[in-house]
Every structure is written in C-alpha cells, then in structure tokens.
Length: 200
Image (cartoon, rainbow, N blue to C red; front, side, top):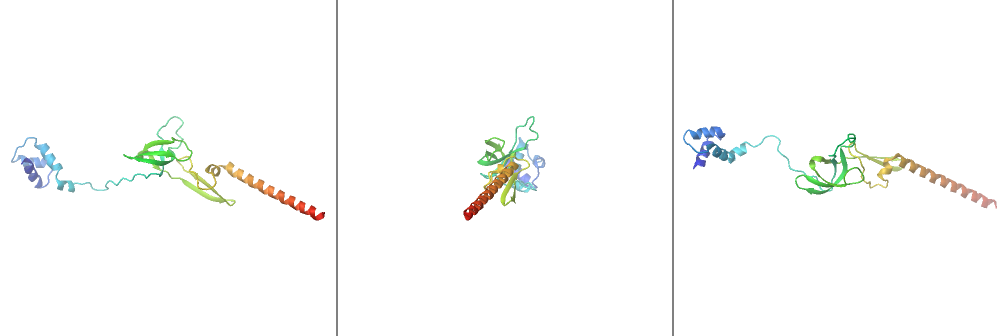
C-alpha cells in the first residue's frame, strides 16, 4: 500500500526524491520514507527512459583479432633507456583473453620478451613503412619505423639484413664485378685458342 501511494505522488509530475517526499508528508507518515521513495524512483520506467545519457554513447568493443601484428609498450625503464624505443615490436597476437588482455609472441629478431601477456592499454597496431625501389635491375627494400626497432621476414629473395646494410650492397656489386671479369677472361682465352687453332 505504501508503494502505491508513493507511485501516485511521483506520477503527478515525476518529481525527484525531495519533492515526492514533500507531497506524501502532507497527508501521510511512513517510517524510513526517504529510502522507500528512492527505491520507487530508481524503478520508474518513465524516469529511466527520459533521463538517459545524451551525447556520444559508449561504442561496441572491437577486440584486436588473433594473428594481428601489434607493438607493445616498454614498461621497464631505468638509466640509459631514455633514448631507446618506447615500443617493442612487431608481435603477433597468439591468444585473446577476457578483459582486454592478449598473449603475444615475438615476430622476427628484435629487443623484447619472446612470449608475454599484455593489456590493450599497453599495445598499439604495428605500423611499418616499406620503401621499395629498383637499382641495377635488382629489387631492394628497406623497412623502418620511427618508434619500433626490428624487421619482418620478407617474401622477397633478399634478406632484410642485406637490404638494410650498405655492406650487403657493396658485397653484391663486388661479386657482380668478379663474375663479369671472369667472363671477360674466359672470352679472351677462347679467342686466343681459336686463333692458335686457325694458325696451325
């Protein structure tokens, strides 16, 4: 019976707790009136629908899918680490755990743990730049990122270490030069042999 009286008083204008209490105390007395009015107002469907949040609502969760490449944040700092990269990477997502947690595994050779568990707050999608250009008829590529050290194995026939190092380029040119001089030498020997056979 008390809840019905409180509902009628509240339905006169869907007032807040203080105004609804004031209307009820004009005619009735209930023990613990404030807590009963708060309970009825918390369950009023009309008030819940009208007082919903305005503006930008919460979005749906978009967990990072398994197998995606991410970079994880460096969480241990000490002396001499200020100039080091802020993120380790790339890491591949191995397992998606509840509460925005992920088990990640190292991809390639770089600094950082081989297998670790991390939260989404300490991760970002791994973005890397691949610069591809042609030189002397051969495809050369370089991979770099301003915040993450390391390289992903390339589907191309050139290893990332060789493509990124200048010594690898010099070594390739030296071998090409040796091959060309050897072929010139064998051609001269063949001409000399032909001339000697023609003279005899």
